[in-house]
Amino acid sequence: MQRGQIMTSPLVERIQTIARSARSRGGDTVAPHELGPAPRIAIIGAGFSGIGMAIRLTQQGIESFTVFEKAAEVGGVWRDNTYPGAGCDVPSHLYSYSFERRADWTRKFPKQPEILDYLGHCVRTYHLEPHLRLGVEIASAEWDDDESRWHLTTVDGHRHVFDMVVFGLGQLNRPHWPEIEGLDSFGGTVFHSARWNHDHDLTGERVAVIGNGASAVQFVPPVAEQAGQLYQFQRSANWLMPKPDVVFSDRAKMLFRRLPLWERIVRTEIYLTFELRFLAMRNGSKANKMARDAGLEFLAEQVPDPELRAKLTPDYPVGCKRILISDDYLPALCRDNVEVVTDPIARIEPDGVITTDGTHRPVDTIVVATGFEATDFLSPIDIVGRHGRRLHDEWKAGASAYEGVAVSGYPNLFILYGPNTNLGHNTIIFMIEAQIRFVLACIDRLREPGVEWIDVRPEAAARYDDDLQQALVGTVWEAGCDSWYKTAEGKVTNNWPKFTFQYWWETRHHRVADFELGRALTP
Image (cartoon, rainbow, N blue to C red):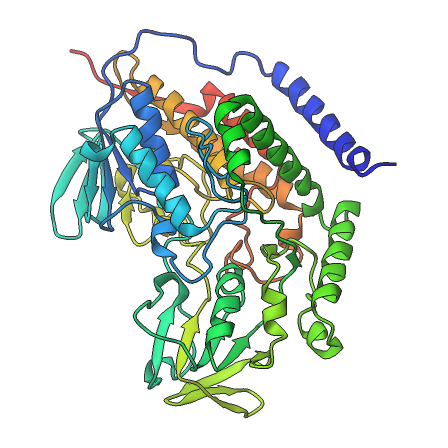
């Protein structure tokens, strides 16, 4: 049997099941109506989510919005992460808006500067500059029950009033610093990979890299070529797969430019290929075992030393932590000037790092690559909803939201790339676009005569979360490893546990009855 036959049949059967279920749910869409004035909308964050939301508003003829961005320029995670080798692990033709495709990508897997340039291009193309408020950080958002409005306060004390707030902060925006004894006392240079110190020259230095996730996999190879000695401190090994990157020829770019249909075909083929990978996200599945065999084979090909290979062999199912793709990381770890250290760090002294076995490794620079505060959604903004309830208090046991977008008790507030909408197998841009469509539908409801606010009903939110938690059972994310996909207590708050097309369908055909509408009192 061919590989396509093995993988495609379950997917087709699942699509058919979803379609049958959807047909039985008829009447869940909003009936057409005459729209009133558009609400005043605040968009917080100018990364892929915020910019995408702004573009779709302009395409709907809505101009009553403001985009607040705490940094001096747009770009989100692609503005902040400028470390050597920074790039995307999703092909360029899929890692872009479906409504703003680009034919002149220079390579299959885009690098950070090109993605940042793409976002700048989107801002210019859709004339978003007048809507941007750069260098403005929001400190709090408070719902006024009497006015049915959101009051936003900036960190410098300025107040703004809006009818609706859309958060586009993402999940990877606040660097996580590890709690290691003595880190503050280190006498050399220390910086986080998400805040790379480009003024510091690493040539010939002894460099300690703490963390071995997606960022380290990209910057370790170039740094290893530059440093005199590099110590890669690893708590647990990662599953790595090949990265089939290519530079697009002028002829290929010409074809993409002159034949838009070809670009669409390529984009669709990439999407479907990635979508099939969800089959490997079920723990113990045949697809997961196939992925494990592929990962072990790749490791054996790239790391001939059996002792080092043992250090780099994961002890958990593929996908439990983020799967990394790279063709040069493992060879970099085989270099004579690189040591993979698996003994835990006991403390850091002014001149080096001490591991629990008592070994002292003198270093000049420490690069912290320990990821982000991924489960602290919408932090550190203080958000107060109906009757004074505080969102972060309600999320102490782990964030949750209806379709990852709406939270009961917080009317006219929506989240893009919110709880349980991250992916382990496909592009987040697809999810963001589905969420934006969801928000646009809610805006239409707000524009109905007399409607002042829309809020998901608590029973609907509870039912949704129950279904979500049930869907997570049996996935690789609950297989026992530590990852940024879940809280310290073990609740998976970041990942979507189904195919992405199911999310697209659910957000497109959500139940009208799941929402409560607040109407203005008439005299």
